Image (tube, rainbow, N blue to C red):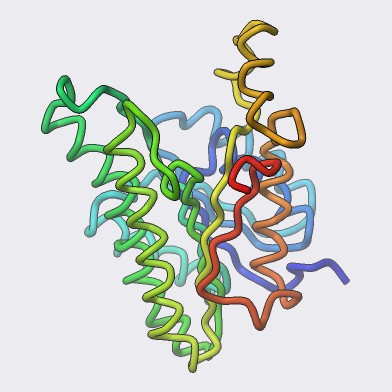
Length: 248
C-alpha cells in the first residue's frame, strides 16, 4: 500500500518549483490531488495530465490563496469534487526583496498577504471539514530565513516567522481532534534561479552548508509525504528544517 493511498491532498501553488514536486510525490504515493495555480494555466494542465498517470484523481484550480473569498470557494469546490480533505499543504509564496530603507509599503503588504494571510485563509476553511472527519494534517512551508533572518528580506522573514508561530498555535488548538499542524523550513533548494549561479558563487554558499550542496525540491516533497502520511501521527507543532545542516 502506498503511503497516501485513499487520502485527498489540497496544495496551494502547485504549478511550479517545490509545489509541483510535492504534487508529483503525493500523487506517486497514491493520493488524490487538488492543486492551485494563479497564472500559468498551460503549465498547470501539463502537470495535471502528468499526475493523472498515477491513476488517482487530479484537479487544477485557478485560485488566489491570498484572497479569503477565493479560499472559501476553493475549499467548497474541492469538497464537492473529492468529498473530503485529509492533507492541506500551504505552499503559495513570493519574494519582493529589498533593504528596509528602500522597501515600499506595497512590497511589505504583498509578501505578508501572499505568504502569511494565505496560510490563515486555507487553514480557516479546511479546519471544519477536518474536524468533521476527526483528523487531518496541515503542512505549512516556512523557511530557515524565518528562523534567523536575512538582510534585504525583512518582509519575507517576517512572513515565514509568522507561519511558524501560526503552526504552533494551530497544533495546540486542534491536536485533541487528531489534526496535526507542522511547518517545513527549507534552506537553499535547487531552482531555476540557483541553476544560473556560477561555480564560485555556489562554493561561497556551500561554505556555510555542512552537506556542501543545495537541496532538491524532491527532498522537500518527500518530507511533505511523510508529514501527510500515517507515519507521522504523533508529530505536531514542529518546525522541521531541511537545509543540509545550515541551521545547525
